[in-house]
Length: 492
Image (cartoon, rainbow, N blue to C red; front, side, top):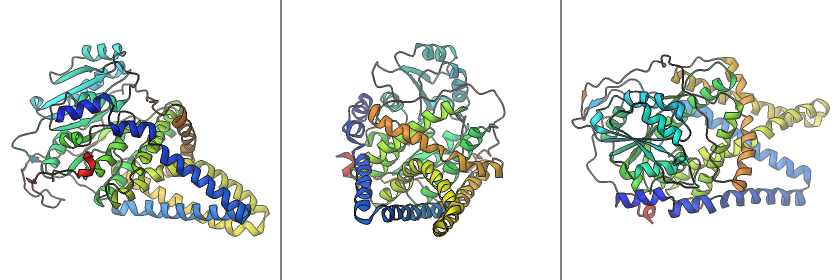
């Protein structure tokens, strides 16, 4: 049964994939058409001035609530201190999947990362997947002296060459009880697999995924610093807060640790979705599974130019729309928690991505009007107060993330976020265009091997606590022996 499910996912012909790719954007398009129709109707009945005031008031309330939410997140996110790691009597078999395309220059760094994993070598299976037309990457991997547990797989030729398709191909060959996804540039903490295996062993079988925090190697330029702060806020604060509240969340693109049985239960990844990580996080939640976060990080490099940043952000926003639209076809599936999490993560990311740029321009225009029209000054000052509140909430979130990730807190970087976030609207414009012109286009981020330097220090878990004992800083938990069965609706 496991092999059959994985093979179906590998071919990318599952019903969920086809629906998500071909028809999944219908709710998003319907929503856009509905908003446009509502604004047009309001303008016809109320007059242009009143209609614009109503739209302005709605956006004011939306951003006030969003800013309040951001201000609450640092208080909700738990801080995890270094804890003792149980020594399992039998370390489970682990499959490491590394999907690759046009990455010959990363071969040595990939092999170094695999060799550096502190996990019994006879319990690891590493599957490196390359496309059929990517002979350079395959040759470079084979020449980089792969460890004995690593195998290079060649994906069958196909017009579809997405990362989730490569993951499904590897999943069909996976022998591990647990599966983790790493990207070409990833430098995972050596103890990450042990931490994940221990957490899975101490958790109910309904825990399907553990997300490791992604941290950006410091780089002294505008994009590098802003990208690092953005990741720090997301992985050090937002995701831990959502996990603490028991809400599902969109997974990061890498360092996702899965139970193999959970992946089989949902049919693997959607091969057509360009943000398969966000998609599978919510599909697992719809099937009744849960997710949590790890403490030991994976280090990555930020895009070093706007030419690299913009296509990546375009793909993310396009994939968010695909995921949100597909999930909204059955909005109550998975319960109210999933619905709320979907709106407060992907929904807000899409909306703010579209609106950030235009609203900044509107704020500038309002400032100019307020200088010449005293009647408009009250509206301007209300918007000004909201703008300050929004920046304070965002700066507090970024600063807390920076502290937890070990980055220096620079006032200039927090202020520069005012310039960085409106850049999302440029990517949102390209994303909307691509939804119609090329929905399956995968804008790959270029990678370069990093010059060797010491990674930021992260405390290592001490493997001294016996299996099943209380771990400092956490409630006492024992392995659940009761089998977990996904909801029947997830298998329909």
